[in-house]
Structures are given as C-alpha cells and as structure tokens.
Length: 276
Image (cartoon, rainbow, N blue to C red; front, side, top):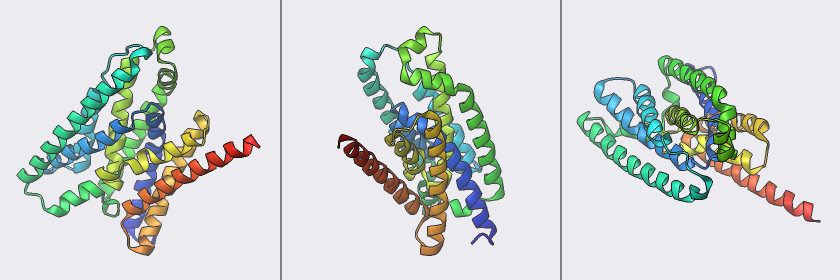
C-alpha cells in the first residue's frame, strides 16, 4: 500500500489534517459552535469554485473564502451571559443566511467555469487519493500556521469559553479572541475538506473532539486525544478504503460516528457502575 506515491501523500495529508482538525475541533465543540464549523466548510466550497473559475488551486480559494467568512462569523458583541440564548439564535441565523448565499454563489461559479460534474463531486466529497506535492506543501503550511496561532490564543480562548464575564473583567479581548479562533476554524475546515469534502467535514472536525469531551477528559488530555483519534480515523479510513474499495470519506465518517457511540456507551456504563 505504501509502495505507491499517491498513498504516501494521502497518509501524510490525513495526518496533517487530523492533527489540525482534532485540536481545533476540541475548542469548537467546547464553545458550542459546531454549526459554524460545518457552515464554514460549505462556504469554502464557494471559494474552491471561484478558484477553479480563475484557474487557481482550489485549496487556496477555499482557505481564503473561509477565512473571510470566519471573520464575519466571529465578529459578535461580547454581551452578558444572561442574553446568551438570544445571541446564539442570532448567530445561528446569520450563519445560515451566509451559508445559503455562499452555496448559491458556488453553483454560479461552477456554471461559469463550465466545470464537469466530476469536479463538483471532488469538491463535495474530497479527493484524498489525488493529493499532489503542491497540495501537500500547502496543507503543511496551513497546519503549522493554524496550530501556532491556536497555541498563542489557547489560554485566553479557554478562559473566554468557560467564564466569558470573568474573562472580560480580567481584560481579555473577547471579540478579538472570537474572530481569531473562527479564522483558524475556517482554515481548518478548508484543509479538512481536502480530505473528506465539504459535505463530511463534521467527521474529522467535530467527531473526535465530541468523543473526547463525552469522555469528560481535562483540556490537555482531551486535546491530545482528539488529535490522536482524528489521525487514527484518517489512517484507518485510508487502509479500509484500500482493502474494500469503498470511499475514504465513508470510512472516516462511519468510524467517527462509531467512536462517538462507543464513548457515549462507556460514559453511561461508568455512571451506572458508580451508582452501585
């Protein structure tokens, strides 16, 4: 399997994407912004279609468009915790409207570019087995950049997530942290879409993170566990696809769902065991 260049590129790509999406997704799920991460991947579809129209690499268009959308989605007033449900509804509404508009523009760009249906399928469901050297270099650069930025804002981000009022009183720039984090999520979504496609980004961006949070792990073990699980899901998906000839995206999404269900079952069993 690893005797072929395209398989080695695929394993390297899924390792980079798994590390990035596992760490980023842990904060995303903790902050209750999984829908925003899902929407950013769809918005990235518009950037990829626009890049194809201009003759540019799709990944660059996906990252740029998603990053701009991340700024918009992250630009929210701090507010107080008493009005958190109202702010959440308003944020979800804005996310949905932006998502719908971007998908319409993406369909228009594909028509203008006269792209074949196979091109749209690759954008929607990913093409990990077609990752070339240039795309691998871009993924490596995006991973290093995003993980470095996330390391810088990790402490204030965690503080602002768990205790926003106290963080604001301590001088944490809630809006700046929110915008910075959503830009990181946007670029992570674009990178993940290169593996699973824009329709299945949930599998790597939120699946491993939700599994670790369901197990009740503390921050550092949770972050390490989410990143490790995302990488393992990617490797297993590639191996099973090689042996079964089923799409890689199917195996990754199926294994992510299975891992979460096992975490739910383990958590339920642990709570029952403690009652006796």
